[in-house]
Image (tube, rainbow, N blue to C red):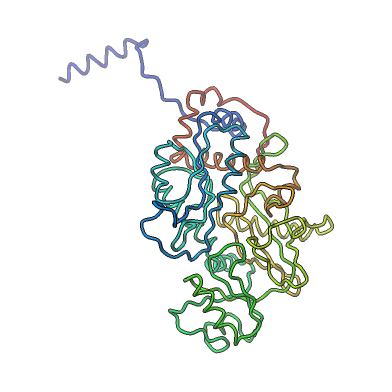
Length: 423
């Protein structure tokens, strides 16, 4: 047996021209080749744009339960995203509701990538349900992972994270009926948060959207009944915070890959869109829900060039949050100043409105984006490219089905240099 093995080894050494098994091609990613990769994916990448499923529709859930977070389908915006992806060149883009039929539909349509535009169907922490399921299924997606979907959507958890990072946010406390009656001005919990501050206060659910169920309370005596009313409407913990009387702003921030003027660029830091100021009418003290008053250019504005320092401060805040939390998808930060002009973070929106602008209605994200000269399709393509770039660099395991679509040409493209900017 040993003699036979030695003979075999000798024969191999004496035949240097023997046939060998070719090495498996290795995907060597180069950002400057990303435009070519995306073009190659146009006919083959199968994308699902997912919107909020309706629990009242037959077959969407097993048992209907509560919606602690105010429900909305976001289907109209999902169609805007779908249309933009198709106009860009992607040929297989599917619209799907976020409900219990989704896993089977993703399998049937052989989906490679999901774009999450859903706030969930029902139940607690609904923003995290879809990304959690996709993590289990092994399908990559445009959106936040389950942990940060929940953190960003739960205002009290996000505010505690801000405090840990040393970022100013309005003093606050939370209340739930299981903790006993809310006793403003006397409970240690209340005094630790507010001291001798006696109002006004903002009271709202810890998870919500579009400024719904947000109340201004002027006196300590009113707090218990308002907090109870909000709990009765939502069945979730109530947030109480000090009212900030100054100007209100928002600024969106995303990953460093963007598409403008027909070209991709990449920076090592997050990309902040231009800050926007929310404009109040004479009788308004908080932002009116977009469900009642649409976002228009009359209700918001870009900051003046003379406010350069303020713009930079807002950008720095947004960038710090995105960077320190290691986020991977677009968010919008809402900021308000106190009576002395000091900026405080109110909350973060993990799924900011991506409505395509019309002559009458727009979105806060698009107002901040258009100052760079970009259109809606530029924004959508940049967000998709940023996600693909992240997957190709840091998470190839989950991106392998997408990489497989490129493999026949991966070696050819390794040394191709397309016009790009990667700092």
